[in-house]
Image 1 (cartoon, rainbow, N blue to C red):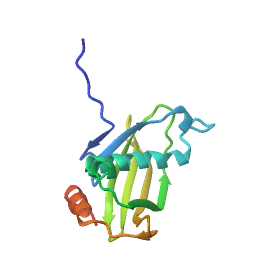
Image 2: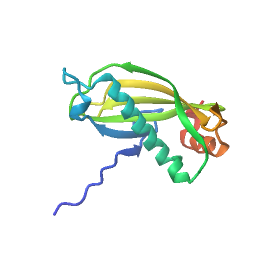
Image 3: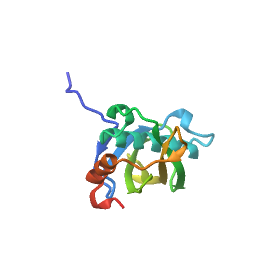
Length: 158
């Protein structure tokens, strides 16, 4: 009987500075287009998953904190650049970091690499705004949230 091998979908990493965290996903058949490559829009859910794993790792998901308030982060802007294609069954490592945290917004950077050969395929910069859902207005990011991010990202955070 062979020893069990632990496979994690996320991990802290220092392999690609300034990124300190990555998450893995595998390209499914339904993610590909008629040419057999990942449809460009499928990278957005990959980045969402990596961002959620990043926040889970830091204990900042709403479900883990038990916070019951009407505040949620919503997407304000997303910019994506494509460099190389991914294909069905490729294992993709998505590096994610918070690059900037403002009064009401946070900007994430993502970089998707093919795990097999470490080719950079896609990058993204995404800005989310904390919104009070009852008032439909931007809300200040709590100091505790800000301090947790700053402790993890260190001097790489603007």
